Length: 501
Image (tube, rainbow, N blue to C red; front, side, top):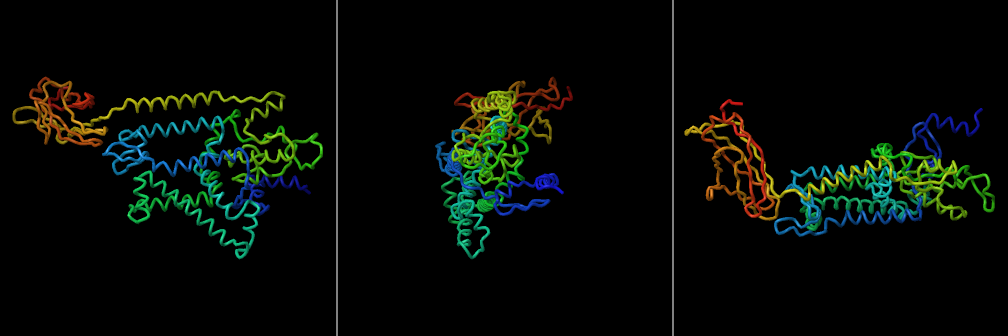
């Protein structure tokens, strides 16, 4: 016969995915099965420094998300005055004083790489602090849980409400109120997302009057549904099953990374404790399960590092509150490193090593990418030119014996003023230029390009004597701003048809 403890061990060996803490967190059942069904996690309200930090970050991030589209930024009469705007209609991205064109998508790529490297660095230093404090799933889930707690009460009240019939405790009214508020928050979330792609005051008015584009209503519906579903119903399942980051971040941390840690060197052996009893021969953990009750993913931090842990530190606040009540030092659960626990077990002083090989490498990559982006922004030109040579036909022999090639010249004027450009052909002998629709002035062709526009011109270049030329002559078209003297050039080739290489 197996005793109770041995039987429990055997059950966990057969079904290692079953975690007793998840059942304790739900408060709904203690049964187990080979495949655990989803159990709704109902976290308990907790007070403490980390909970206050999470509320502060939540309000800051939501304020940024909802209010930034309404910030104005004067860019002149011909440009939109919204500070942050993704203008698909005109292929522009505006971020305060920075304007990104489609040709400059490498800046966006650089920012994405920079964000990834920054996340790697933060993870190597502080574990999953991104997940616990700033991830959109965490922020909106916290907000939805607060709404749920407002209508249905704290953990014990919600558990009781779930078990009660629909006809008692105003269950129907509480559920309706909760879901209506959730939907309104979800709609505000989707609506704010749309504001980043249109002029915010205008699109808000059009959304309510029915004059907004159909795509706006489609994306409003998509964002409303996803926010409502992910933050209202799926919550910890997103962090555990849908998000790839918990699996990736394991390669970013090491034994020196700061993580939410149960200090088992101080807490074990654990067990219930009576007031006035001696603490001799036992640890500080009284097995109260408050760390489980407040956990938004329903895990037991005392089991060590786990995939489901988002590093929110609410278990630290809960444990510190218990330690105060039983007159024990705080910090039984704290931000700590695995190696520090080993140091304390050996009688050594704990220390935090933030500067190590991986953090130095990540920091250097962040610095290099940031420097490249800043250099590119500081030195980018306001004019660009693209040349497309006609390939059908490759060349034309004119009646006077000269050879002519055709080109399409596209000039991009990124400035907020109209510009005039002189175009010339460099590094080729005696070129003769003719531009369709443009008359030469004093022997020069001046091309007018309006502010913030791209214009194309049809250009023909001919050479009278090509006997001494190669079959392919490489040269440059050059444009020069008549006001500032700034230039841009593009290399292309001239086909002579001589057959010489």
